[in-house]
Length: 143
Image (cartoon, rainbow, N blue to C red; front, side):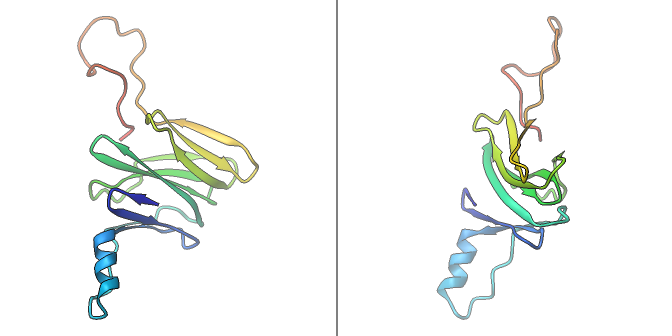
């Protein structure tokens, strides 16, 4: 999956890697170049990663990963955070991941053919008629 100059890879080893296209192209163009190194590596999944989805969220790219370990995890590309920012547990292995284009929700498909939805935005507090708090205009990213 590609995101703003980066390539996100994952697979049976349960590890997600983020690569710079520039470093990949540079290494491919020269036999003498050292092998490229991943910019980010995340290892929180315990079984194969079956799908990855990428979405922009303000200045940050969000990455959602679905796994046979029955979890959907969200990562942020923009900074060096090594931990999962958001996790959704399912009752069956996950085979697909998607992020709502308006950044309202995460979606995951299970091996049983079911679709799961999890809110991605922080929901504004209900009934807060007076008082300050909260910037205007809807929610923000879960991260």
